Image 1: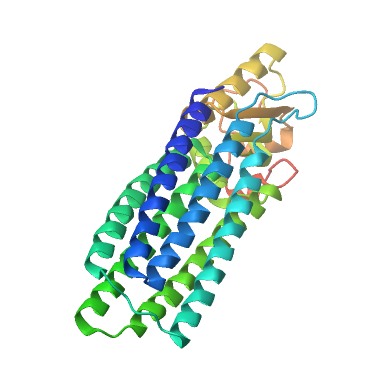
Image 2: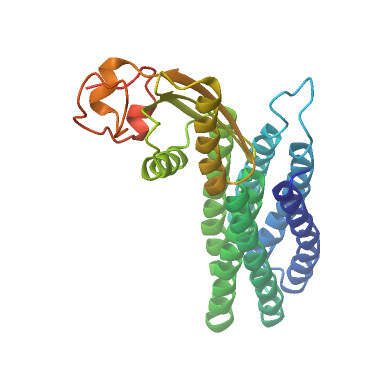
Length: 328
C-alpha cells in the first residue's frame, strides 16, 4: 500500500469512529429537546456513520494492488462509494423535509433548548474540524471518497450551526414553527450536497475529463518545456480513484536513438510526478518530428533543420487533446 493510500485509510477510520460518537450525542440532544430540527441533524448523522464505513471499505478496496482481473487497480471503488454516499445524503434530506412538514402541521412542544444548543454546538465544531481535514487530505491525495466524506461533514456542521440559530430564535421568541422551517431549509441544502457528490462520482465513473486538472498539468509542461519536446498531442488523463493515468504522444527529434527518446519521456514523467504525486501511471508514445514542424520547433541548434523557426505553439487543453501533430 502506498503512503498516500495508507494516509487516506487512516483518516477515514477517524471519520467513521467520530461519526458514531457524534450520532449518540445528537440523539441525546433530540431526546432532551424533542426538536424536529435537532432530529434532522441526528438523522443526517446516521447517514454520516453509514457513509463513513462505506468510504472506509472503498478506500480499503482502492488501496489493493492491481491483479489479473483489475489491471488498472481498484481505484474506481472510490467513485462507487461516493455515489452511494450521495444517494444516502439525498435520502436523508427527503426524510428531513417530510418530518419537518409533519411537525409544522402537528407541532410538538420543545424543551431543554439550552442543553440541546450546547450538545449540537459541540458536534458542529468537531464535524467542521474533521471535515476540513478530510477535504484537505482528499484533495492532496486525489481521493474522491475522502473528499466526499469531508464535504459531507462540513455540510453537516453548517446545517447544525443553522439549527443552533433556529433554536436560539425559538428560545427568545417562543415561535415554535421556526423549528420546522429551519429543518426544511437545511433539508434542501442537504439534498443539494448529495446531488453534488453524486455528480462528481458519475463524472469519475464515466471518465469525464477533469478540465481543471488538465489545464494545470499542461501549464506545468509548458512552463518547463525542454528543447527536445517538439510537440504534444493526444493528451488524456483518466482517474482511477487517487491514481492518475496519463496517456499522450510526445514528439521528439526524429534522429534521437531509443535511449535518448526514453530519457526525454522519463524527464517528462518526472516533472508530472513531482507536481502531482507518486500515484501516477504514464503511457507516453514517442513520435519522430516531421520537417513540416521545423517552423514550430524551439530546439536552437538542430543539426537537421530544414526550415527556420517561426513561432512557438503554446500547449493548451484544447490543442493537446487533438490526435494529430501540430504545425503552422
